[in-house]
Structures are given as structure tokens and as C-alpha cells.
Length: 125
Image 1: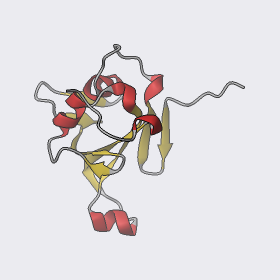
Image 2: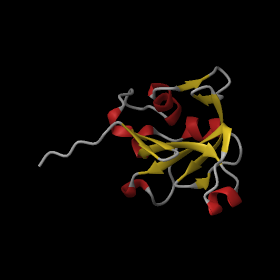
Image 3: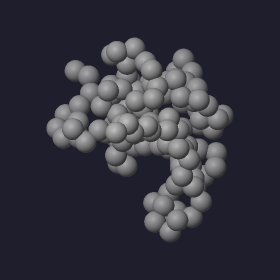
Image 4: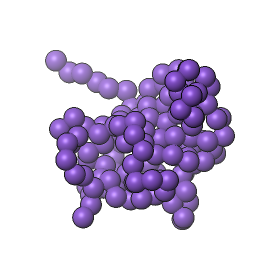
């Protein structure tokens, strides 16, 4: 049985990209992958924008990863451990808890790690 997965899915306020649908070089990192996604731009300083809105937070499996510098995450995680990339408006903890709308001017990227890579240490040494 052949199962196809859509490259991009929109769920309410979340834009979700299926990583396996986007081609990159073999040893690509997350930054290389993000550059392939429609609407995503990365400038020379590593600042990420989605449809013109700045990404101010990167989460891994819904949790902060490597503090407040998104480029550390995008340059150090490899594409092959990522299953999905979700992009949402940045929300405070109370907005997320209450289901309120987030900050329309800032975006958060959530990287979902493949189940088999989800234990132990990952990244580049």
C-alpha cells in the first residue's frame, strides 16, 4: 500500500512542512532545509523570516533548545533527524495555555525530531 504525505499542511494557525518532501544535499543542516521551504528566507546573519515576519523562537519537540539564538539550532542540527517543521505565530505561555491568538509579527518554528532519533544526543560534534 502506497501512502503519500502532503509536503505542506495547514492546521488552523500552524503551517506544517513534511521534511521528506524537500530535497537538500546529503549532509544538510536545518538552515539548508529551511532555505528550501516556500516563504522562508534566511539572511547572511542567520536571521530567519517566514513570509516577511521574523522568527524569534525555535523549539525542538515543543521545547526551547540552545537558548535564544535560533541560528545555533539551525546550524547544528542535521536535516536527517527532523521529521516535520511547524511554523506558528509566537505565543506567550498564557496565550498558548488559553488558546488565544499569538503575536502576528513574530513566528516560532518547532522542529519535530523523528522518533528513532529522539533519544540521547544529536547534532554535530
